[in-house]
Length: 301
Image (cartoon, rainbow, N blue to C red; front, side, top):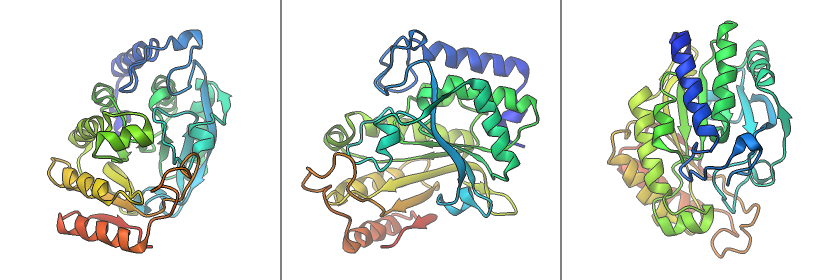
C-alpha cells in the first residue's frame, strides 16, 4: 500500500484545495511568479493551464530500486522551473515538446502503467502540474490504484509545497545540483538554488527518511539524492557533498552521476563544452567516500 492510500476524503479535499490555490496565481515553485494560469498565462516554466506530457512508458534506465526488473512507470511532463543551459532533456524541458491531456487522461495513464507491470509511477519535473497530479491520483486511488509515487525533481522546490506533499509522495528523488549561487545563476537561471534544495530535501527526508525497499529490492519509501558532476566544476560537486554529509539527510542514498555530455546551449561555455574526465569523476567519488556517503550508486567512467 502506498502512503496516499491512507488518506481519507477530507484529507484529499484539503490537499486538492491547497494545490489549486497555489496553481493560479502560481506559487508552486520558489520563483512564485504568480502567473494567472487559469487564464492560460504561462509562468516562468512556460506552463499555462493545460496538462502537457511529452511521453510516458516503462523506463529501465533509472537507479536499480526504481527501475527494477519490470520498469518504472515514468511520465515526462513538459516545461521546467529551471533554465539549465546543458539540459539533456531540453526538447521537453525548454522547448515544451508534448501533448495536452486531461486530468482524467492522467488517471488512466496511472492505471495503464500499473497494468503493464510498472513498479511505481515516476513523475519527472512535476512541480508545475501538482494540482493536476493530485487530482488524478485522488481519482486513481478510489479505483484501487496503489503503486508508490516517485517525485523526480531538479531539487528547486518550495519547502511549503513539499510539506503539503506529505502522505502523497513515497519516494523523493531530487537533484542537488549546485552549492554556489553564481554557478546556479549562470547555468540554471536562479541564484537561490542551494538554499531551496537544502530546505526542501530536509523536508523530504523528514517525511520519508532513508531508502526502504521491499522483498524484490524495489523502493517503497525514502530519499535518493542525485548529483551530476559538471566538467570543470569539481569544487562545486565537493561542496554539495559536504553539505549533504553535514545535514540530517546524510544517510540518504546518493546517485553520483558521470553522464554529462554537452547539450542544448552548453557548447559556448569553456567548461561545459566537453565531457567529464575519468580523473574528475574519481576525485569526486573519493571525496564522497571520505565523507561517508557510501550508500547508493557510483557511475564509473
